[in-house]
Length: 226
Image (cartoon, rainbow, N blue to C red; front, side, top):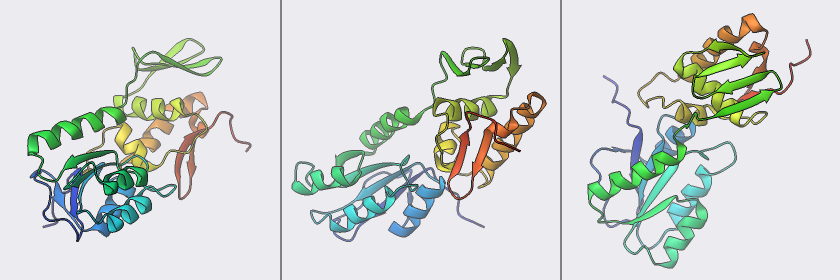
């Protein structure tokens, strides 16, 4: 039987005197963590290191490489959070620092704070075009003031794309915005996009949800030429 996937991973670099004390994360090696974070199989990592942070900072820079794990969250655990190594970890892309002996309750509290930063808040309205508007209160797409009701997941997907209209969003970013569990099938984002397009097709808006091969998806500001 395949192991159950977790949404939070933990890894321990060679210089770390011990792993962090969290018991709800999934221990993996550095390469597995990179792969899982980049593909959206997990949203956060707990990375333990010693005073020598060279291996840690190299890993963080690989994770933060363009089109990599920009949306992932990393908590770094160090013996001394005021050391030069701590500053190097922050510069390399760590989101938070904790002492390596931090209790599980503190770790979970920090994870909750990081999760809040990436939680989708569908409030107010987003005007995509003069006659095309998303209404967060009613969770509808208003087309010439006529509401198109969308299922929750498809509305969250369209809202996320609409907030950054024209930008390419990776599958990982969309998984996080839609709060798709790590245990979900790898094609969940692709399926959600296909369903959204089906809802938009009767209004000739399905072409606006564009696939950018190898990168992700975007909401196009204009209908592409046929």
